[in-house]
Length: 373
Image (cartoon, rainbow, N blue to C red; front, side, top):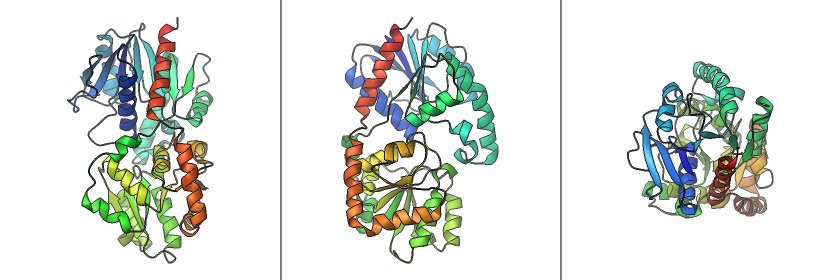
């Protein structure tokens, strides 16, 4: 087989999509030295993602979801004479050679189901919703196989696009413990080791509900006067968060950290009182699994994929209720027996999620699609 994998989600600033792309191709490289792989990278990432004889890289300047990519990148892919093309994010380009069998990974359907809270503002939410309503059906009809990262995403797929020809599989994300333990940890991160703090990972857009965590802390701030709140990730909505923090007299307790290494994130998870993840919508929820692996108790929403991956190993709350969030925080912080049970159940749950398994299951999809008529 000759397979083109679109890894343009890998960028200079780490993201969940980039982590998925890197870990997938890293895992494929470990299990397959026979088939040929062409990695489609962003031009800004000049170094090949994988350096191995059966891997080569080609380059395109824009993201998978850009208009330029959807209308122009097919020519570059067609020139590679590949058998399969795997888009790792929700879209297939127009003009792909009919001989190329296409596979696409869907992480979630936020652009359809919750576009406003998933984007930076109302206008952008409306634009991506219109864009998705045009492009997604064309992608579904063109794809030979759709990989979904959770059963929740798969259910959304077949509810929104009930095409008889749409074949799908659920392949979960994973954790890589060895990688997360490697690397130097800066002294300003180590300084958190003996402090009491709640951690929230990911961007601070509305769908991640960062203000929900803030409102929960506000309700218990008198009981836990030394408890801090750390947001780790892109600061898309951090200014709005800080406005609320000032309103609730919590500004001196809020900290925003960006561009941390995997080792530093793992360190913060190990020493946090809990991970707060009260998202309003998720396709999977990778930080939850990473917290399980690190032995960090998890407080997360009881909706979408978070119910799927967290029902028996986390403190599940109503993300729309600050009272529910506060009650969950209070229980984890005050009940050591409950806290320990979450840690133990989380570690058991984490064993189900491995990047090596994701790579192996994806390779099986490649083989199956390749041999289909």
